[in-house]
Image 1 (tube, rainbow, N blue to C red):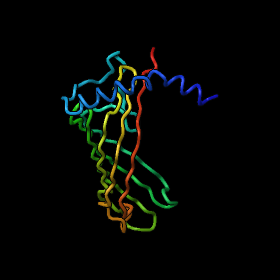
Image 2 (cartoon, rainbow, N blue to C red):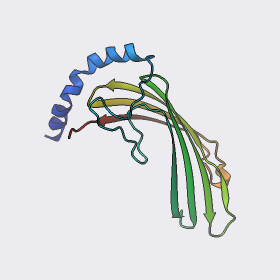
Image 3 (cartoon, helix red, strand yellow):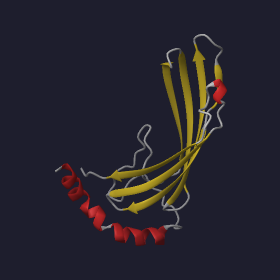
Length: 167
């Protein structure tokens, strides 16, 4: 029953996918239009720790604090995230965290953590619905021996959506 309700709710989107494919190819290299809202006026928001489906240009700085991480370490992270729309349909994101560790029994450690680079493609661009795909590659640039990185690369594909639910 729940699957049927979701399918019915997404029917207008699914019907518009054929038109969206033609629009995407025509707009792949079109200039990026600067906007902070949908054509209906609904604001595009970048929620905490959730990547947005829309493309934009900006530098985001996050400050995170964790206490008793792993049972004996306080952690602080100053994360820098540069998101840059290259065209109307293509964007890139670069993330670089500055990490400070304060273990109870050892010396404090500060340095850059693992950096990540992601590409984003806006697949469907409708007035009330956006669908995009992200491919992120996290590189082991942080010193894993000092606790500033994982010591391995990571590959993370994601699908993102934004829907205007109305007033």
